Image (cartoon, rainbow, N blue to C red; front, side, top):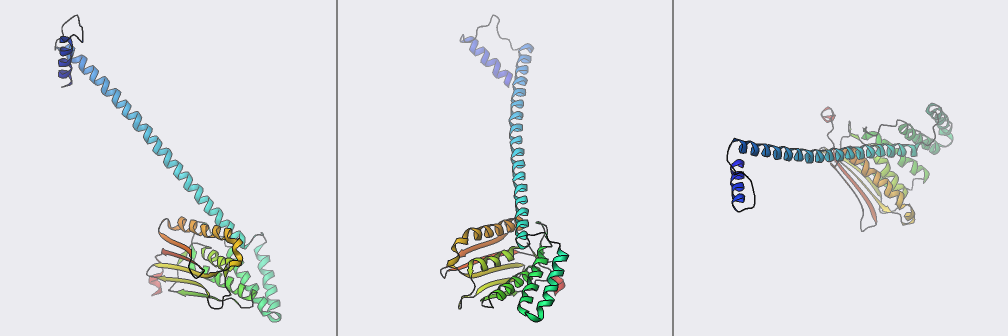
Length: 284
């Protein structure tokens, strides 16, 4: 078809004088071979051009994927660094653990009869430091029951410090045996309550509610806002942002994390994740 069209166009252009040729155009083997050569030449040129353009686009896609992978690696390293920093907030010095706990145990036994409240504070602090020394990897989850034990120790320490004037309720519902959760998220939420909330309100107790039901884990904290601690809002937001980053690292987009201030001047945080407990059948 290309040869026929070329012959007709050449003959027409020669007839109107657009092309001047010393010899007439003849539809013979030489003409057919010439047309075939030109068609193959243009086809080869077009194919090479398409291949080059496609290779260029493929290379751009590969570069984009490599950049995304690099960003993912950097974010993961940043999350690991955040976790280490959170752990170091509980234990800043690198004291030999055996020496430290032996010393605390000696102080506890000595204070148990003379100052029972001080002895209880020492025991709670020792248990929290022992837990912090475990230093789980950033990609590892820990038993949720252990995290709850740590917030109980933290609550007890604050009760001893304030002569039991704290108005705070801890509610745990559901069978948590075998359930695992990212480390230090609960502790950060409870720390924020003590740092930025009013936990001594007579009619509005602070609340920590942990409920596991139908493969859904819900964590909710409610506390009155302490207006006298307004200068600490920056550190508060940093802690909240770190919680969001850790949840994203462990659950991707499969989680809900809300935090807001309601009309009653209460600060509320809510976490909801789907957690299938592999130990659930053993619990029945």
